[in-house]
Figure (cartoon, rainbow, N blue to C red):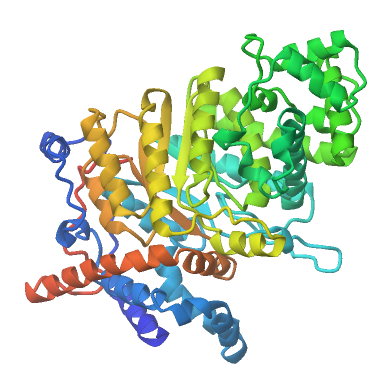
Length: 595
């Protein structure tokens, strides 16, 4: 498979001329009228290979066809890790990674470092497509080093958005924060809207996020046991990750209900203290509290085993209630050391968000596995309360293959409306399906993953429309390769009179995939970005393997793109256009809009 790749890549390198992408921030009048005509008539054509792929070189088209063909082979995807290990044993690491680098890596990634990425970034910019740099090293709880299994330090590169492999202490988290701040600084100086992506596991240990998630699940258990005791018995711990979002578990609690519940739980407080605690949670002061208010008023310091001395009198009382309810439910609260680590993470997130707000950069907080996602959602929502008041600084990510996502979206829309901040969301279908289903089988609870792809499509589209219904106080990144969803978004924007560059609607696709969507949207003036993974080949391989394994549906959808690529390749051959590898058929339009 890889021999022809290596030969063609060397040939391409020898004949490819050095081009400088023309840069401009203004649209020519002809381009502007063309955009208005296309958009106004709703005639974006994502099925025209000639228009979609005109910025791509003939070599890139040929490589794309072969890569998509290989990725569509179930046996190859299923055994990719084994094949990679076999290659390393037989021909060695250097030769194996050289083969990968000239094929899959070259297709899906921009390079190993900042210098390698520049040609790709310039070419995207020239056709109106922005870049969200993604340091793609993978990290999970099992990958953390231990004293018996240390991970050596490796130098990092300009931007960190993936979970870093080499946790050895808080020093690494601080280093990662500095790299993210550098990323935000770069994005703030880029033309158009600046966007940066961040994983919380780059700023705090996954085990700590898991610990905070368990405590937050305990808080949800407290709520259900206190105010819906007859229903809470039927809900397993793992289901608490999404159960409170269900409409059938919503309840409004009066002061009398609150007091009665605390008495049933044998909480040791006076009536006056209970009233003060209720008033603390009753944000709207309407005599009722619900789950949104219950969680909105809980701070991390109130989830510690020992209350910090600097807590206010009201928060001391809240801590008193929480600690007693936690003891009754068998929940272990944060130790002093864990509280310090949590505060350190929160401090880093504040620095990142402050820098983003100052530079007018949007920060996308990536979603991760559901066993850590509860803590990630908690921190993200707290950031949004502080930094999204005047500018959509922080975006949360919603994975639409989860069966409770639509409820989460509507809950958070309501939360932002009540609390007066800008709702900002990135919608994805999801990338941890194999892990989530395996975990649900091991723990014997219903899988949170929707049963089929159509249900996932429906969930995504319904959530998207809910956000577009409130777009005057929202922003959304539509991260999808699904053409029907993109067409739905474009059609809905047209019907509601939302101009492509005047509202906070962004499209995003992965580098190397769905170019017919990205390039068409970019050339028509929409705000569109590519997720651009980068990093050393050996560190990025787990990312590439997971993408192939988790996105089988996406790779199957890429077969349409492969057919379009074949059509364009044949057209270039039949019309005798230049076929020198490394030369695009048409130069990118220098007046194309930039995201």
